[in-house]
Figure (cartoon, helix red, strand yellow):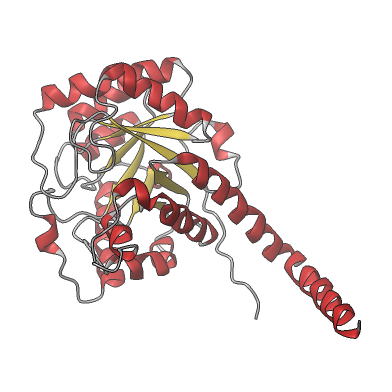
Length: 314
């Protein structure tokens, strides 16, 4: 059976050329400057620790780092805007000074603008603009790369919003509406990345159809970012005999598997907490898909068949 390979989309125009020239899925490393992250429990809350962690992620193979100062774990409350700014801006400035390509993970236009003023190039908005009506104008005016995630409500209510007729069709439709609103607000299409919002209003099985049908989002003709790293649905998948989900840090191997599959499906970028495995996985996927496109896979198959024949004759 022939292998179907989804081509990688063009990278957003606002990224450095060195990243735009890469013919593989990018890896975004997560820098949580929060005391209550589900994934690391506040290990990088102090600015110096957050900067060191960001530099470690880059050394491990991250192409860009995503700095966030407000937890979006299930049940989390909002952080005052002044506190969010105090958390993220020193980290953004320091990482930019070290040559990092920085994304700011925020739902607030004021925080996005402040981070962009300090050198960030990407705004990663888990609300897709729904949390702050000023966000689209900020993106249009600054020309920043904008990741619009599928979202239905803040962390304290999102699990109750896991109601879909067809999760793939519904998420695609809702993201198409966000894209139309962005373009109407003056944002260029080449600034926009779409994210299916794994884990957001999708605490469990709703995530798998989205991962299995990334082509539905790709059909909107925008790059796609996949953020499966350490999410609850992976913890439940790996649960032991008693049904207790494995801890977030024990989900990294499953995350790497998702990275490889998403990269082979044509994802523009994956957002991960542990970089080394995913940096290797995107390169494996790139080599695999390149072979599938050129026909090398068929040549290898024929060589393998010859080996089997030789072994059978001995």
